[in-house]
Image (cartoon, rainbow, N blue to C red; front, side, top):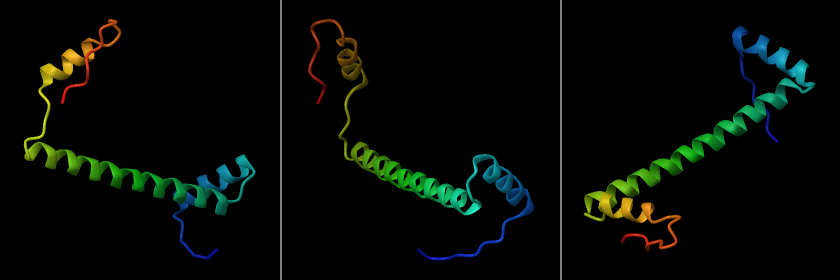
Length: 87
């Protein structure tokens, strides 16, 4: 485990101290949890961006499915005669 020093603004430190007391946790614990959640969120954003870029490249290369075909497929759900997904 490494040690990093940070300066907290009063508008962050005071509520953080209050929350730490309320939850019976240390400020260190809460800061680590917040950073962990931030890193997870950033990782998910990167994955979403990669998916978006892949989808855009697919569209640009002409690989798409007509909306009417997708709607027909979705409308077949729950009818007992479900169609195969469009290709």
